[in-house]
Length: 280
Image (cartoon, rainbow, N blue to C red):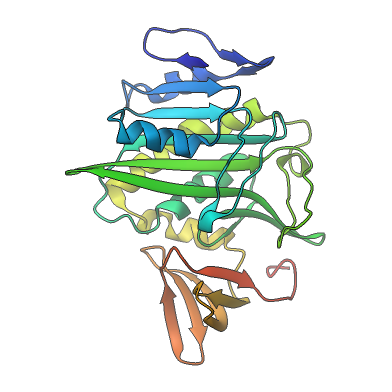
């Protein structure tokens, strides 16, 4: 394991890859003095590891990066595969106390998308997509987990981002990769773009909630004005048209029964077949 903490002063190399750990910590340390960056060659899941640490009482702010995950997890129990150099997989863990947790995954998605490229779209509640004449592809996913200890709540924010071409066998949505938009970019460069700004976004969310992020999400919303199918995970399916998100991050879907606000983390929302780019 390589790590950069208060007493260290070098980038973290691992497996021949040089990661910008010191630069990231330097950009964050003024607001989080005990913030550290750790790089692991391999682990089951960065989210799982930070949740293990939190339950053992280790709740200092940390960015944990793995060059390869053997049991990466996505939302609703889905797997997220990652190979060294092909993907960027990391988790940000820190104590957090927002007045309202609603919309945190959206705020994270906004921060990552804005840090990378203006053409990246957002799919409620936790995916980054590429959507153009070539079709729709999933670029990245976000998984948020929390652990509570009395009044203290520790949040773990996992990000999995495809960097290089990925195979799509068995996937409902084919994968996209960052090099489609930024040829030649590698995982360390992508991390340098997103990490410090993500910490800033999470701290802003803690102070102000989702409302300041609402318009920014709606500007990139891949579902907006499209027909969607909403599944509750128990066989129930509702169809309607998506109309952006509220100031608390709920998805607005106009159905036969009227406008509904979709908030449950257990639902699945899929766009129905149609144009790849609704803004075209």
